[in-house]
Image 1 (cartoon, one colour):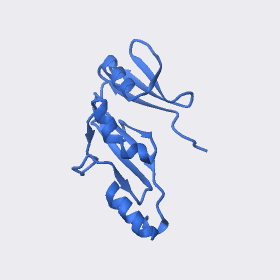
Image 2 (spheres, one colour):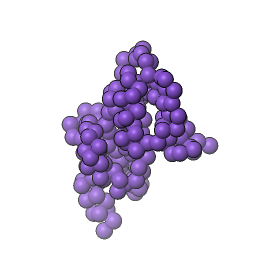
Image 3 (cartoon, rainbow, N blue to C red):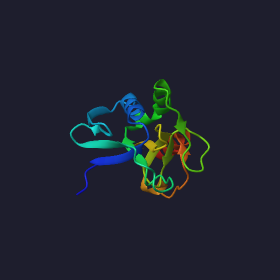
Image 4 (cartoon, one colour):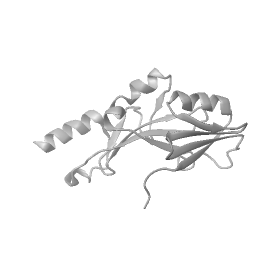
Length: 155
């Protein structure tokens, strides 16, 4: 039934600053007015709404202010270089200290995280094919660790 993201919304302090940031990420402006802007994530399919002046009524929690953008595996491998090229810093996820993209075998995905100018949590994520025998691994693995494990498993 669910086929993808239709829309997500984030509160922003300064709409102009946020519009420049999301344009820099490569999202195309769908429309805006004096206090809102909508950017296409997938044109005609899903978009992100930015709302200026919305006070953060609750303490920050990533489930309230988080968006994950789907990318492919090779794009994720190059994500740190791409983020650096547009002057965006990656951030560690959770208790991790590394900003490097990582694989979650038990979930079958890989991610890298960064924040927007308002501290909203953003993620680039891709699907990773994980053999059933490796889905028990709950650790977050670097791409090097994952690829070495995957190579040794496929032999």
